[in-house]
Length: 318
Image (tube, rainbow, N blue to C red; front, side, top):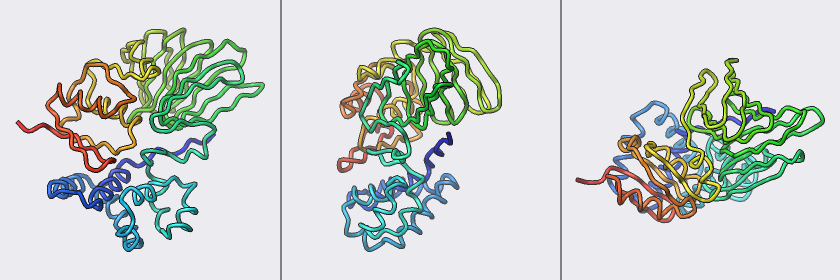
């Protein structure tokens, strides 16, 4: 199966900025930060230019629509483009509709066999008796027949408990393939690669370049299409999310926020200046505001909330 291209992060951030700046609640500091962000990278500027071209066609509509409605329209998955064009009259939605992810209803899920929404966890049982515990914002394609058992990971992550069978069980990712017999493992997409943690038995990973490695229980692997890199794991941390907890130890703040984003309908922007701060602790996934406040109480960060859908995390004033 052909996997969906991953969203363009610069395009997504450009739209998030547009929503804030058109919300009527943006401050002078917000406008200055936007300018700094836009011109810090050529891809940011290009994304903004594309959005501005789009907005030129929908200028009158965006001035009269509530900011959240504008955001939902611009972030609509491709399957809703025609609907939005007919009902909202936004001819240019298709320019960005296929590039970005709506925070509440991510990716073009109508093209996936099964998915979870923001803040949703779900367990499914496959026809062979294997189970998949899906984390929030996960989309999968599943194919099981007389010859194979195959899962395409389009986005997100899951824990697989694979039952013994003569048919091979494989997980296809954009970076390579995981092949397992009877086993239990956790796999998730991360920025630029795939995180794998083997909880029981052993699995084999082959990246797109053709490099292979066996990973045994208690061990982890981070891989992309060109690299296989062993990583340490904590079995409890790998499974804590199934109970609504985020367990981290000496983890970059950027990774913590990435996990919390899957459980928040709000846009959460993290200042790169604090992205590499190290975090240790146990946080509730089902109460993101509480988790963010707990981080702010123990770390040199400040959290600014604008309306109900925009959260900004920056360095605290000293």
